[in-house]
Image (cartoon, rainbow, N blue to C red; front, side, top):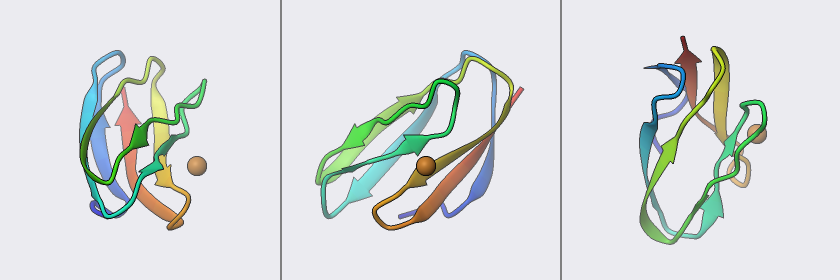
Length: 74
Ligand SMILES: [Cu+2]
């Protein structure tokens, strides 16, 4: 899965789009408050993540133990 831990600039209340391509179904774990757990399917899934508080938010995929990205939300 890519990116791997890249830092992505984001703005409060503005969606960041992830295009997930996977050979299995699964889910992301967005460490916002409250946390978000958008799911993806086998194949390509477009996921929009919106964070409504500033901060550094990890986006992980726990099954492969991957840090996908860090959203730097301002
Ligand atoms: Cu997590």
